[in-house]
Image (tube, rainbow, N blue to C red; front, side, top):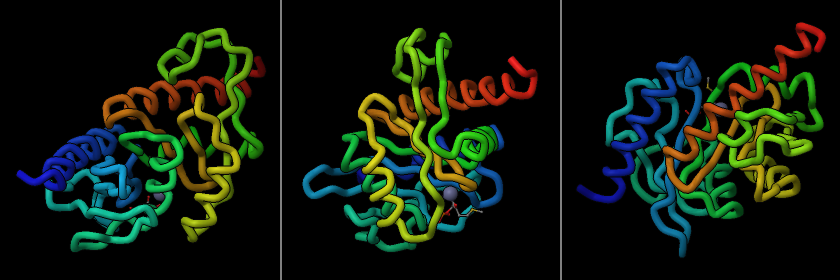
Length: 200
Ligand SMILES: CSCCC(=O)C(=O)COP(=O)(O)O
Ligand SMILES: [Zn+2]
């Protein structure tokens, strides 16, 4: 099996899992893994498909700008995946349309504050870190513009980015680490939103 097909199989399995959680509704969301660093090459999910029904062939190899190197139409957001992988050194980038991150960005458009929660450990931070701020950038259709905005707010200790009125990106050394971070961060965001509702 080629490296691209192997990546496609892993991406399909991961996407099915996220779809089952309701975080990839319709055709939303996209996932990638780094195939090569020099030059940068990623395997990214193909565009416009039901992410709960992907097969190992629904994957496209892209370059550092998100342009297709193999056949097929890559995710419309491949350019942002590539920028995140290039800047952070991550081996995998996941993007889902879970609701809590979008609600949180609406409430805290300058960055979502998280503090003093055990679950922060699952996001690569200390439980009692004074303040963790998840960056928020404006949505748009030009991935170069989103990439620049990501890069301006990038901090190596905060492996996530919320795109306002759109969704969230989380990254890690591999798909498993990215997933663990995403699951814990989604919990943190839901908790933080819940504290406004109950006034605490
Ligand atoms: C209803 S999904 C709109 C596009 C989007 O935000 C997304 O995550 C999926 O785009 P792709 O090109 O990767 O299918
Ligand atoms: Zn999206």
